[in-house]
Picture (cartoon, rainbow, N blue to C red):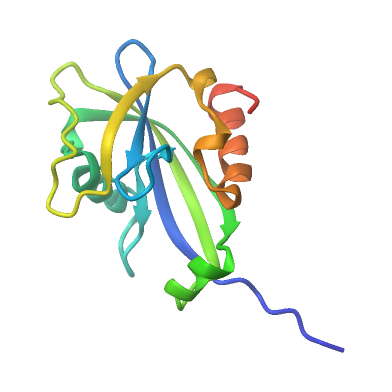
Length: 156
């Protein structure tokens, strides 16, 4: 009898950032035109999730920690990488994501994608129900369906 091999998930954090009108930030990947997603990134070994969130948000969209308010957090969203991605991520089979719903403060600076290692070329604010699954690679769609339902009661 074969033993089941447990998938190894890379810890990851993602931000669902709302502006003062309640619109949601989405960002287009520099290397994939038409690929819109939420800012997100890996958690370094030994790093607390909320510290990883602050680091990733500042690295990707230029917002310091004190420019947004944490509203809600939900964990346990997982997906497996397709084979071509798995080869690049040698130690992991997929990601386990923790999503943070946050709201920009009035004093927040503008989004700044011009970062030392930019990941996004453009951003925009949309109503949650305007999000389109076609913007995502197939392997991420199930997680986005669950996240949009859990946080915004929006079915994709």
